[in-house]
Image (cartoon, rainbow, N blue to C red):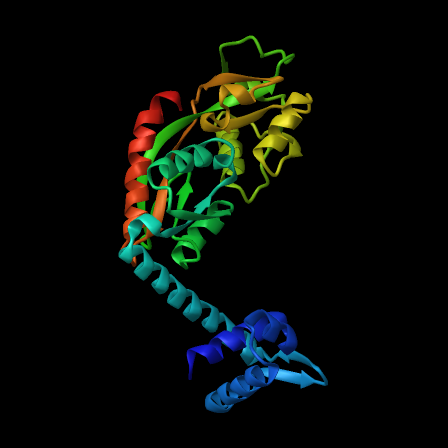
Length: 300
């Protein structure tokens, strides 16, 4: 079995079209067809059904594609590691992040890092809590910002960066807008604007309200921070958000109010796979992030 056979198989399998795969790979169609036939002969199974000019993966072909994807991803990661070791100042880091990091935290730390390490490249991937954990475990990303930091995950190494509080967000004309702080129980009759239920921030808000004896009435769901802030500003409800998502410049038409009884907070950090050594570029970035957020902690 040859590496090029796996590359050809993967490309054809994803496109289910030999001519398109040939164009993408800059290889003759006949060469691709011949190598896939050789692969099928060596494996002793049919990976594709041929129907005229069309091809479709067989059931065993779909299973084999999953293993091929993992194998080629590992090889590509190995090549990246070698490149990073040869010159850590020119490495590539694939970073995951939750939507709550998109507005303020991620741009701030990467901008500051690039000033000192301008040739390190980043590939960014946004996702919800469980997606980020799984993506780090299967190495589709190198590391990820996350909050709260997961526990009881032996496949992950964690680096805590800071702890931040949550605040209530209301429209500027809201009855509570002039208060310095609000007890969570005072929100019993308020309509809430929350993230979708697959987001960990959704669960955080629901569980906090339940801890003081009420189930929040959800009036709207926002897929991202800008949407939630916009819905709050429009007077459609209130929301509870991490303080790092509420820098002063983002509070137009909304008011941030301290939450008490109970106060809410979350740990924020980085996760990496425990099953591999970090590359020099990753070590540099993690150390930089720790120092960066130590300096920034007074503002979070």
